[in-house]
Length: 185
Length: 270
Image (cartoon, rainbow over all chains, first blue to last red):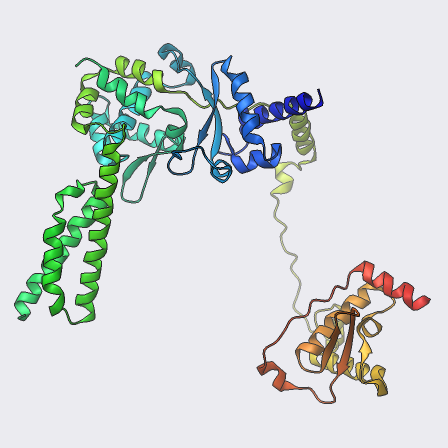
């Protein structure tokens, strides 16, 4: 009973930490969870994830750099960032509720897919050309800046675009490519 | 190799560097670079390079070539993963899909982060308290116009009174402190650190500890440490030793906390 109460308290605390925005970026670093919940925080997150399943939500882990091929070590988890995201996608009509126009989401989908197809990085100019084929010029620049600000894309000093932390947290890249290739031309 | 040939080879290396750079910065296909051919050229030219500029150009070319090879490695790695897809095919698909189709497809794989921002009663209370304590903006932003005072003459005594000038220079004070140390030590050669530094008030004790640190640093005295007995003694020199500054100095941290001072004072009373 005592053990159950301990976990219930820890799960509640983990939910508060993960749901409420505490920094500029959403989510919590593994080491912050370790400080707040103790070193068995991966276990607590697993239980929380099971609770969230019923609500179609999930605890998502985004590792620093590439995702480890095998079971991540505690050190890798401490450096990773944890988020709560939707589990099973979003009906497209609901996307409007998030304050995004259909053009914005389509532009984001194109930018992300294009960068994936170019092995993770592409010149900004090329992405702009791609978007300009269907969006007015003024909106292309504004949208790309918005995607960068939101953390979907990152840009380096050579004007190369990369996929940033939010894409890694929110988008199933493999599934996106599979769906795109599976569409009938 | 003639000067003309050297110039030609140098230009070739410059072109190689530019090509390698474009792989890095503009995403050019790394396999467009013929690595074998470039290595052969570098091998051929290397024995003739003499000046540091030529050798540095050669090293730069090798470095950029290495980054191209790394990019080729990454390309192969990416291609062998399940995420690889033909960019042209994907680009063509993207061009053909309309906005609605793209959005429908994207939202299937898009799981946005859930984040909440919400006011709580404690944060509201804190904010209200801050607001109540906050002075009005016209009060906070008023500029204090400096009072105009007519210039006049002052005396040294007046400046000392206002604590702008010190009564004695620092070294005069230090010398006086050294004399006091020598007097207190007398025939014994040394004195217990706390017996010298300790004073009736804690503030005065801190002042004396501060001056003592300068006595030791500037070679007027030295410290004798007995770690096992936890005792520290100060030994004054008969003449300041300037040669100490040339030797390797060691810092000795001594805690002069209020607790230590109280303990010393109580011990003294006993």
